[in-house]
Length: 226
Image (tube, rainbow, N blue to C red; front, side, top):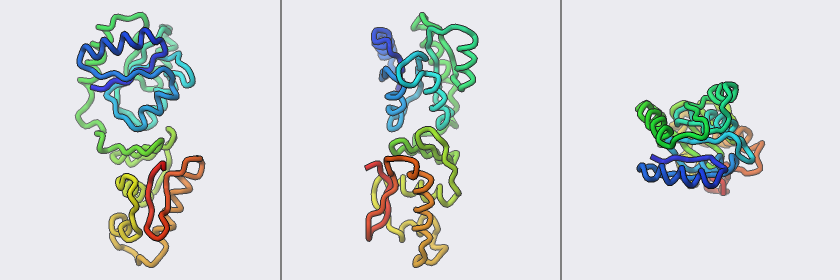
């Protein structure tokens, strides 16, 4: 099981990771919320441990961002804040559990194992999620997020985006797109593919400096942060 820890106390972070690793977990430690959100773009974890009072983006905002595209991975808040209002705020943002510092590591382990056991077999699998930089595509729920914000797509726009994403940076031709997305249900001499690529660019790339949808002149289109 892979755990990602957000904790800016260097001593506590190191001790907690050593404890988890001694109990057959792997543990990556991050010290600020901004780096934490970058870390989860291209890595998969089984459970998140979040301190609240950390630099750049606090743990509650990190929790809320995660829940905007991932409803299933367990989240435990570990914080020195013990007021009921703090706990209410965490659970409002869909954290699964809340543990007040200082706490016994063994108690944390019990709570982690309880959440991991309860994780439903029907939860979204790794194969259902495609990540390209800060773009996240949930194939099961047919939802798309960029930088934590949901993007509304039509069915054909979604199918086209998934096809480009599953090519993993390879260029796909207009002919290949018509075969897989439209199944030859229109004349390939029309500009339908170009029109839908333009639709996607307006929704996926327009408001971002980093463009993900690219044209390779004479060959086709590809999806990549490069």
